[in-house]
Image (cartoon, rainbow over all chains, first blue to last red; front, side, top):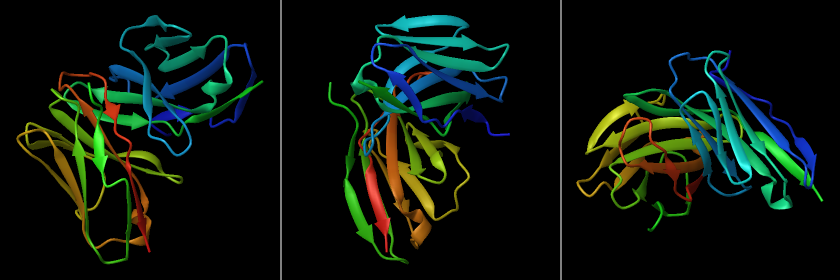
Length: 112
Length: 113
């Protein structure tokens, strides 16, 4: 079992709709969770960080964390063509071991 | 505030050579981590430096090494290059507090021929 799993996609969503990206992780002691966006040929860009169970909203983005079920998700509302990218879920194993473990990423395409 | 910078941006080497990559973190950030990204393996952690000390290391051979200077700038070295070392090498900086956010530089694209 991979430590961090994501559906590789591609995920196609119409412009203006909600895109839902999911991620599961295996290490129960994980404490910090991050979503990065990576455009083709570019480096990952941090979108959201979440540390506590529940929802965290930032503009059109909402991160959701459920530690009991070991999953974290990212919702993108009012999807725009510029949101087309690969979204990487990253998990920090635990405090004192500041290593990000990444999923393989979900490729998202927003259809105009 | 300036972001993370990496030099060089592109590099072409031949097998057996060695290479040094450089990373300057965001001002005030004390931690620098290095990652390798390939199409087959995705993003993999190499090592982390904090206050000039390696605090964490991934599962890479000893050919991969690094160091950090007193100004938090970091270098990564790969000796005896192999074809499989061709990758995007990414540096990420963070303040140094537990669990805080990591910000990536633009990366160095290394091609080994």
